[in-house]
Image 1 (cartoon, rainbow, N blue to C red):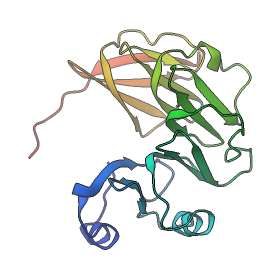
Image 2 (image 1 turned 180 degrees about the vertical axis):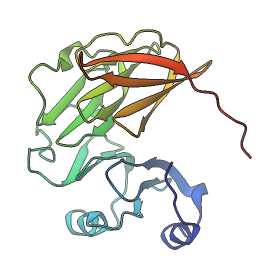
Image 3 (image 1 turned 60 degrees about the vertical axis):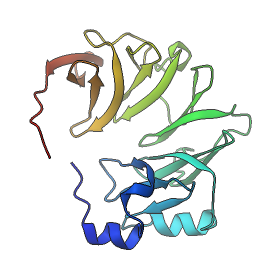
Length: 216
């Protein structure tokens, strides 16, 4: 869990969390990137990200629909489907292809970046292992990029790994959340399951359900 001090929130978001459309986080970044209801960006990231936002894009940037934080870069999806990227470009992860079709979602990794399109296909740029089969990722609505893999959520609520293989024992998934230790949590209609990479085989597997205690 991320501990965001209330003081920082009050300073960064004068109107409070009510104006937040989306919160983008990353396990290797100390801070949070907010997409506001007015289509602008706000940030509590304490390192170079605020300066990069101010330098690469005007502060009055509008029309941001979604955002994603990577290990050293960030992506912003605009209302018209364009993707903007800034930050480290050591592996080409901020070089958005000029021919990229309009996107409906974005996901930033450590040294790579991805876009999901209206037809459910996935595009990627940066350092992407040759064995990853992005062409096999179809009907995708959301992506979580891990250190050595990714998990794709499909429209039917099933999951695929970076090879296009079905993640077993998890269906009716409604949301993916990146977690600690190179893992991803899948929220389903009936339970929460942990999806982790099995190191010897590079295959994702569904683990036991997580019991959630009520919280107020």
